[in-house]
Length: 115
Length: 112
Image 1 (cartoon, rainbow over the protein chains, first blue to last red):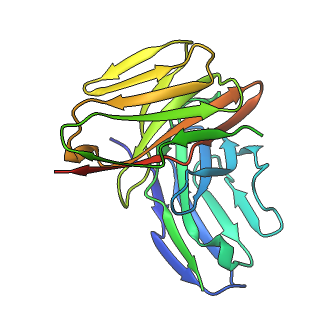
Image 2 (cartoon, rainbow over the protein chains, first blue to last red):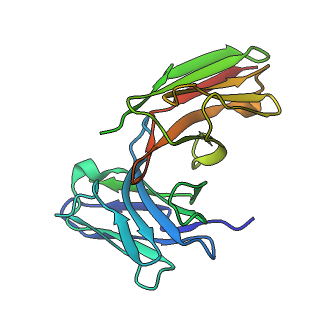
């Protein structure tokens, strides 16, 4: 079965540095999501794309986070500058559903540690 | 905003015992999904419920959606060690919202 790819799997950075995460969704999936998951909690949506357009970024801390999906395929999530509280798992998910309400396929995630 | 609450937060069971986790939403949901996350893994989709009062079964797992579409439950019969993980419910409120709101999950441990 096709999978969502993410890199890197682990990232350690110092606070105030910039970090970037990459996600390649399952081929043909129009909807792409970035989630943040703090240990012991459920995933929290940061941003949702439909093709190359942002559908929902209401939970994205826009002063330091940015996300893009230029050609409507793969996507990059950036944090600049990183803060200690950004330490978490960053999960990418994709969905075939264009309504944004279908089954989501998650990637393995990027574990970020900010020191 | 929409909140989804799950109880219990943790559950330890002896292998062979049954397990149930409950999910409650502060708002009416258009549909609800359940995911399982194994230790060190990522969430994996289990099922989606759409209709009021809907019941679906997958082998030893039974999923229910409440009549008011504000609560749901997952019941596992005769747990096995392979059932270990965290079970999340996640709901869409509809009304133009595309955001899937996850509960905090129930972490299941199975004692062999």
